[in-house]
Image (tube, rainbow, N blue to C red):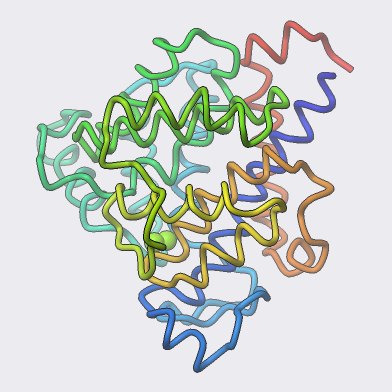
Length: 303
Ligand code: MG
Ligand code: MG
């Protein structure tokens, strides 16, 4: 049972990186441009506006790794100051891309020493949600209020907005539900329905979301459509990234949930073979390390 959880946790982290690497090729393209250039995009080939090597990842994965290191350094706790320091160091490392809201948050920390940005109606970007996975893994099995608070703490270092908070928490809960073996129907009933009750803008049935922007509502509506209308890791990810727009981030978020849901066996072998080797190792090792702080993982005992 613990090895089952561990394998799903590793698959979630690799899923995040695979979705990022697959989607980055299409970031900021429209579905029409994608069809003209690739037909259906389903291979990890790099390129895109960042001119990536095949298998390279972007901020979605590297910020998650930075957050995860901060959590590990604090013994499994999500501490705002440590997270801000980790993001500051991450930005000094000159990552390939940085979202505007993230940059503003890190600069705010550098200038004020404050690890929480002020509440901002305009800060409902997807940048806090895309990196929430390490919180979900370290706090797997903690009570919901505690998980919600930890998601909020990591988010508000850069994004202080109720929609970003609600969306990030829902994605963490989807990952945790999938780690415990839940399928799509219970995840919908126990995570998506309460989210939509709290924030009705996340309702995702109806018109297909194409060209999703970095607005958390657009992003998550596209991700939810792809997750709940498909039944495999590969088809969910191919569906979401071919919608274009913020494709590396929709890929990353769908990837972490679908990874936990379908497990390691669900990850396409040729995608894994293409993924940057160092990233593959770091994601795998960090998933295992974070899980050691999870009460639910500890409860089922070591292998
Ligand atoms: Mg990115
Ligand atoms: Mg992006």
